[in-house]
Length: 194
Image (cartoon, rainbow, N blue to C red):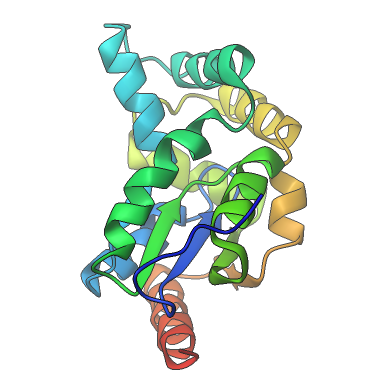
């Protein structure tokens, strides 16, 4: 498969990955504050739940994500998102994809953008992640059992593999200000590589 040409040869796509509660959203927030467009794969699943008029409960988001993958292939969300990313690349030098969760998705992105695609993992311990999940209050979050089920499901999609093979890793077993400083430092370094 050939790499699709874009208006700016310097334009780059970064996909952030990490286990649930690791801090992907906070990383995305830092990039948003710096004018970088963010497209969320999780938002696509949340939109599908709303479209189907399903009650938002801890298990439903994972069920819908699994159903979409079963019906349309493991790469369905990546395929659906790629054209929107290309649209943003017409006017931005960096676009962030929040929530890459599997190897099939990474393959789509690598094939689409080639050497202009990068992955970044945000990592945190299970205890830290569970505490954060309990504090954020999203409808897809539940108790410890739901947390463990979600971790297992996302590992099954190849999430641990893409975390371990990421181009960049930011540790988030730290206080929020320290993590945000690390995100800013990474962005400055990445931007200066142009």
